[in-house]
Image 1 (cartoon, rainbow, N blue to C red):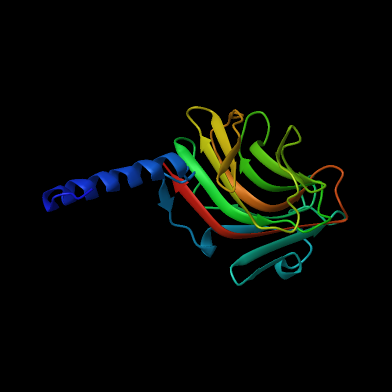
Image 2 (cartoon, rainbow, N blue to C red; image 1 turned 45 degrees about the vertical axis):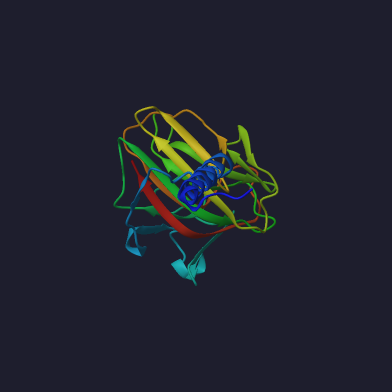
Amino acid sequence: MVYSSSYLPLLLFTLFQLIVIQNHLFCKADPTDGFTPISISQGNFEIQKPYDVPVNQRYSFIDGVHKFWVYKTDKPHTTSSQTKPRCEIRITGNDYSSGVRQFEGYFYVPSGSSGVSIMQVFGASPSSTTLMLRVYDGTLYYYREKVIESNIYNRWIRLNVIHDVGASKLKVYINGNLKHEPSGRGGDHHYFKFGVYTQDNESDRMESRWRGIKLFKK
């Protein structure tokens, strides 16, 4: 069939519309869509580590990768604390009490690390945290209540956590896929943490690595 040249613009426009519709149908939304990036730097990263050892014995930052490790026999992060060993970054300068905030990062947990929290949304009432992601025997859990992702050892995984304070809701994404939507746990002062924080049934040594840390807001 031969079309007049006068129909060519209409045909091209129709083809463009079909491509746009196809992309809309088959390309899933990204967790960060509609969010505004928040500028952060190394200056926003406060390291909490066993009080009796130098930072470089529990943390390194090389080629953009944060590496954290602790032993179950380590001291807490302060002399007055009764908590278990940790080496974590507490993101400062971006505490929040309202609105919608999002954490993004890529994490890697080597084989053998278990009984450890690797990411937290701090602040709740009466508990301390609104969200905690823990590793037990190669599986990532929301606290110890729900499996978020299995077989996480020895691979880089993208994590996005959205916290809507007003709605008291959270969303946890793994590699762009929504995995869990827990309710909030109260509190009026929140911030993000990542690294390693000893929990129950812990391994002798616990480690996590992180890169590409970003924050967003609405």
